[in-house]
Image (tube, rainbow, N blue to C red; front, side, top):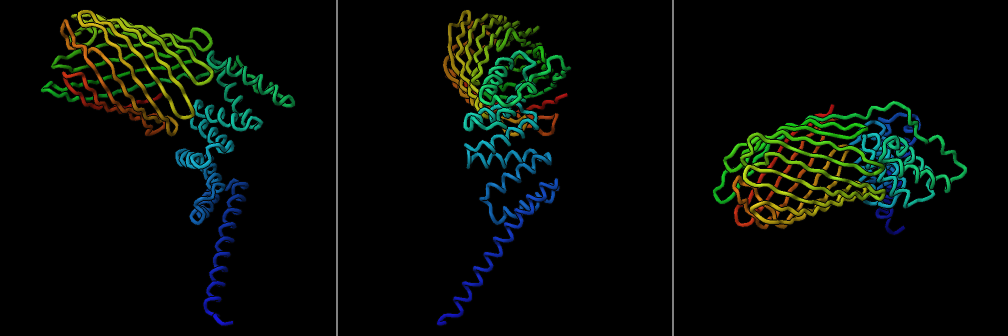
Length: 406
């Protein structure tokens, strides 16, 4: 042997690498055994050790994400599932696992979106059908889910005739208590250009959601153009028929220096099974020096954890003229109850300034807003806005708030 040292070095390197691979494979095997034995903490440690050497091992990361989910470490589990789906967006097993996590986190809408996607990718995946039908059967006790559930159940019976799907039929007489109530408060400030005084605002809101509908009541205080106002506002939404609902909103102000003395609005909504919703509404507002009428039409689409919305609004103001504008919004949810949204708006609009001829001008707005859960029952809300009101002023502002669920 002419070169014993290099050859020996290569041999030792190969043996070391083989030992490392064997150790890592052993870690993964031990982790899988620990999962089988319900020793989740040990499985978590072994999987993390394995991933330190094999960071691209999707199977190990998938196992770790499930372990975190079983340990109620939902945030880390969701991040891992999202990372896996970024690399493997068409993997039905990962979508099914993330759907179960969303359900445990209390977000059935995101769970159903993942299951719908998984079913489209793998139409013969029986477990996906079962999970989606089970979730819809729970929702089918409300009007809005009946048609979707019945349609999917019929499709499942045709595709899997050997399965007994009767077990998933909802128990319609079972007692339910899905009532939820929220108390929220927020305050904000806007700075205006052209030597105009800053705006200030504050609100307290109480809202509730039941199987019969939803509603809210709030008190708002405004300081605009050095004029103080306050109002009492509220609204209620209720189902009309399957996938139809109607909403009424209104407000009354005893001061009405800038804001409306009274305002009434009605919105009719139609929900479609493909994730698309349509809303059309009319509003009348009476101010101290003028009044306005407006019509608006909104279309929104939900896909996975995203929401897209577009609104067209036509407004006619006495003594001021007619304006029309449009607004587009994209929203993304993350975690169980967190979301962030970006909104863009432009067109012509009216800025009520307390005069008999409020200015109508070109407007453009960029706003960013969201909600982030601190605990299961406490969330922070926030928003930031940049608004240009023609040549009159530019307004930059923010709002911070908190919401308490009970």
